[in-house]
Amino acid sequence: MLWCDKATFWQGDYALTADLQIAAGKVTAVIGPSGAGKSTLLGGIAGFHPQKAGRLLWQDRDITSVTPDKRPVSMLFQDNNLFPHLTVMQNVALAVEPRLHPCAQTRTRVEAMLVRVGLAGLADRKPAALSGGQQSRAALARALLQDRAVMLMDEPFSALGPALKAEMLDLSVELAIAAERTVVMVTHDPADAAQVADAIIGVVAGVAMAPIQTSSFLSDPPRQIKEYLG
Image (cartoon, rainbow, N blue to C red; front, side):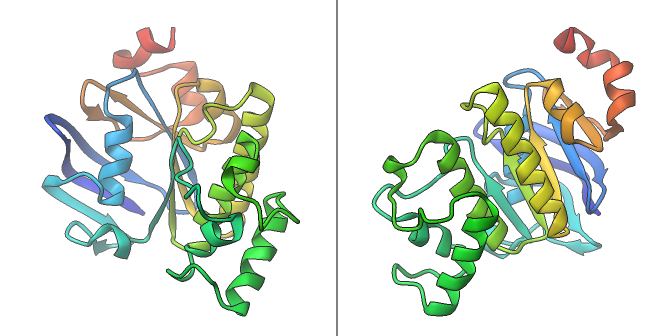
């Protein structure tokens, strides 16, 4: 379980409060208007934004003061965060070892993961030589190879067309759950949550609500978020 215990996360001058529990091994979507604090929630969990109140716990371990690199968290960003001067092999291998020339064992692991995400044979390409969907697959491969219990997804497929976005959502969740990860994903689209999420967290005006089972949330949304969902 991932527990935000009366937590307050800050991004610049903006504060988000969260007092909620996220089930381990499940997919939880985060939905709300632009500027409500969805990305602040993920950034706070990852340790990228300061936490000035409450506690953050993973499986009863207090990780409030743990630095981002030591948290059991990987993250997929909107822009994929691939280094343009590195090959796909080098970008993905950074999840395993911080060097530009990965060892043979790491290269074998990367090659196997590239096959799983649909990038077989593309290890030596630079990001600029990949399509948007292929770049997303490379970022997914890197996040999965980090081997961390929680995978955060901040709308990493929002720039893709509808069909490809749906395909990448299915692929990322399928591989994450197969690896026994807990997935927390920000989305503006209720259809994304309906497609893959077990539960939904509504975020409105700097407050993250407790998760509600997906079908219940979408059929009878919390009062504060009904207008946004239409």
